Amino acid sequence: MSLRVLIPPDELAAGVARVAAEISATSEDGVVLVGLLKGSVPFLADLIRRLTVNPIVDFLALSSYAPDTGRVRIVKDIELDILDRDVIVVEDIVDTGLTLTWLRRELAGRRPRSIRACALLDKAARRIVPTPLEYRGFEIGDDFVIGYGLDFAQRYRDLDRVLAADLKVLKADPDAYVPELYVR
Ligand code: IMP
Ligand code: MG
Image 1 (cartoon, rainbow, N blue to C red):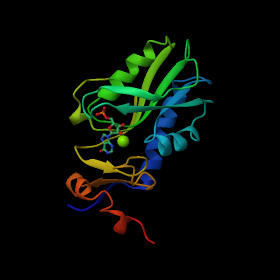
Image 2 (tube, rainbow, N blue to C red):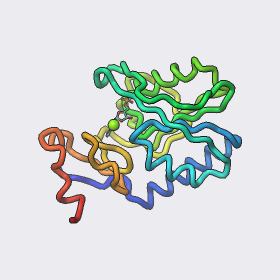
Image 3 (tube, rainbow, N blue to C red):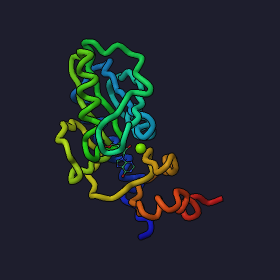
């Protein structure tokens, strides 16, 4: 299977604008957006420029001990004290739900006033652990996706669109799609 554009740039922009309007309508100035590095970066950058409330932005990076186990650890923590703050975790994609479940519990222990989650993409059919997702850009099927922050082996995050890729092709050669995606 080759590549297929799943969400082109104009649809991404419309989805981001819709989520920004939803967050703005339900949040106050000072809402804390916690972006998960690195996949959320393009989404978060576009999102904060569409908000009509003033957010505080911080970042957190997780590393998984073993993929698909939900056993993760924080490799870069947020700098902000979130006690009594309204917090929104911003994710690129929720797949099994294990990461978000773990992170919500971890952040809840710091006694924020509220904690919500926002993801650009939701692979709802793949969920292992049900987890609340208050804001979401798009529900997608069971495809492996790249672009607009999403990577395979750190490639393809810079693409301006979301594409469905063949995971077998990528596992055999992480650079397999470079020639057709990047004009040199
Ligand atoms: P979860 O814990 O299974 O919900 O996984 C969430 C993380 O897995 C995301 O933050 C992504 O880093 C990664 N992930 C899940 N599906 C995809 C995909 O289709 N493309 C790229 N990364 C993905
Ligand atoms: Mg990733």
